[in-house]
Image (cartoon, rainbow, N blue to C red):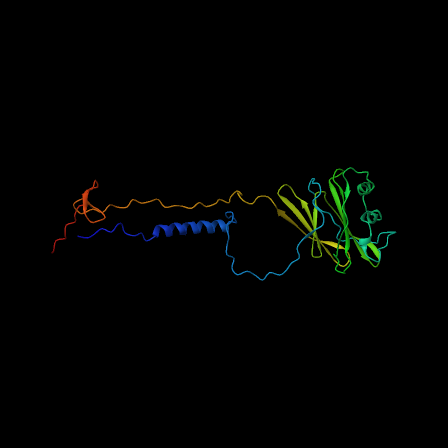
Amino acid sequence: MRKWTGPPARTGTAGRAVAAVAAVVAAVLVLAGCDSPGTLHDAGPARQVAEHPSPQPLWPAAATSAPATPRAESDAPPPSPLPGLAAPAGGLGQLDARVVLLHDPALTDLEHRALSGDCTRCTVQPAQYRDLSGDGRPELITAVLTPEADGRAVLHVYSDRDGKVVPVLAVGADAGFTADTVGRDLVLHEPDGPTARTSSTYRWNAVRMAFVDRQTVYTGPADGAAGCPTPEPTVPAARPTPTPTRPDGVVIGPDGRPLGRSAVPSPVPTLPARRR
């Protein structure tokens, strides 16, 4: 008598088929620009990473207001030195930012009101000193904020050129701006709605700080975006294991002994073919 050793082992065909389907679905989602949170992908060997300067903040974020686009004059004539003010031999670090601003004829009326204290909540940012021109002499960086008057600010940069104080950048910005220096670049960040910000880069061009480029960075939540479904694992349905029976319908137990007749009708025996 043949002893029953249990149902035959599964070859894993169904499992491999399900895994193949899941892989195809995941590939389609990746090509569509969607992915599930926390998924890692092998992009091949890592490239050689060059060392880049990290951002160095100038001031903390000021009061927020309506977003606005920075303005800068790119084709203006070379800047003229501030009248009546000379650069100290020790550098611009020995000058007070307010004194420098008061000598700047390009200041607006609102900025003059901020300097005189005639504008509520108007402020002048403390002077920061960073070498933006690369000549070893730090430039003076300051800003005048008029949030209550017009929700704006003006970022100013002054340089020491041959013993004279020269304005090399005056750019309008939203009063809620922040600024960094990245190497010798000056980067101005402005809010652009609740989920984005605009970053404008200015770089020394041998005459002044010139506009380089502007980028919009979206800061809102990236997960759960429409059109990016997260695939759920598919579990194959369990199939009933056939009960081993003899041709006469008797059920065979694991030890090979008959247990009784099955409720399932036994198959009809096949008659041998007649010989011709």
